[in-house]
Image: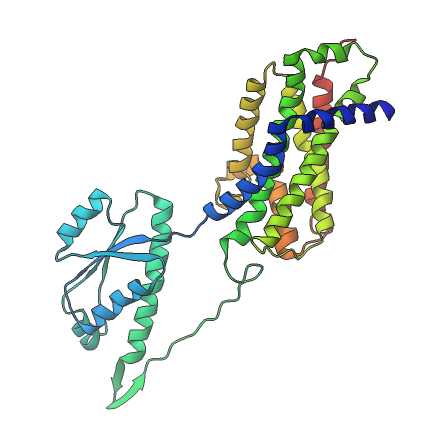
Length: 374
């Protein structure tokens, strides 16, 4: 233990001596969490909206006013014809075109039926789908209001149309704030990236400056060297988590319904997995550039297939199967379950068992791949 303690002291001194490393550890997570949490949004705003009003009636003006009042749409222009509006969409100045046909109001009064034409720029399919939902909601609400105003005539009597009112109940995120969903996942991203990169470059740096050969000829045992090298980064990972949780609560007011100790317990084991991957990369690379490239390669795959930005249920079946081997997936799920749902140890025991198994396997390979020449 005395030998391990001396190695740990040496690593901490080396980290704190490097001013660039300190900025990377302390300032970078704060900046990234603040920026990414505000930038990574599923909401689409400032949709460039144009319309062609061929009816010029009270009903058509009321419909247009619905879009003007929406916070998601920005009225760009009114065009005299659909042909001119289509040309503007081709130029990229318009995202949505609403065409109101002639005699819309009369058709609604006489036949109780009216048609509208909506054109959406669908180059970005995901955005077009969300825009279509916004438009459908606005037109559906407008249609409901129109129906309540129209009267049905039956046997000389007038009766108002009956409607069904729905009141949704949103669990875990009542305000539908995307930050409540994204911030816990982005915190996982920061903890994973920083600890993986730092640990991956650690032993490689010793190789480059030539100190690894000197350590190899000392009586230090393999397990002492590895524990002493990785323990500081395990501690820094928990420190980054603490900073992230503090910012999440103070700045973004993320609800923390579960026991924070459960998060620290899971993170402690999860960091062993990440540090094991970093150690394995260090053992099989010769330069920091190689280590950084390989670490970044795996990080991108892990992040994109973790359910952080896209639901795993929406992926193809083969991709869903691959995500079962992704440790970041389990960390993202646990972070959201504990913070937003108040889950405890019993609810995350399967995730905890899987991560513990990964920690044993990955660190076993990492230790085996490290060759100490005495």
